[in-house]
Image 1 (cartoon, rainbow, N blue to C red):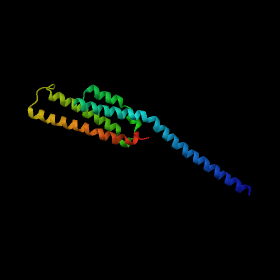
Image 2: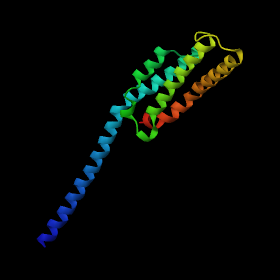
Image 3: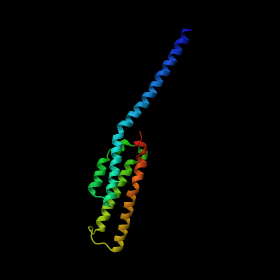
Image 4: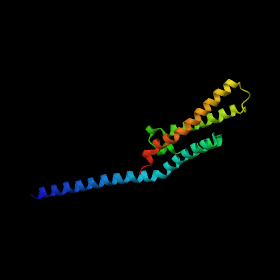
Length: 149
């Protein structure tokens, strides 16, 4: 009889310990998410600001593109690899540098170009501007799961 009581008490104790272990694990995950939130929000804000400046000024520059990289340099540590936020930021940088180069070509800073080629560059630049404009919604979607508490 005593063995049965001890077994029941041990089973209850094991259940209570397991319950608290599960709750502690959930609490740890929540705390980690809360600690990463301000850093993730900073990266989100940097990308939104970058697009906003491109929309206001119609272009970017080398300084702003490098500033974006500096403000988002910790992305690889804060987001799931599968979501490829780091690659997305690199695409932003590449497209911004392309835009700068195209504007230099359009303005004749890279030498004289024929009118047909200039028109092609203007069209490509307009496409990049549209791409950046569309990214405002894409950024929201990519960051949504990380910024919901």
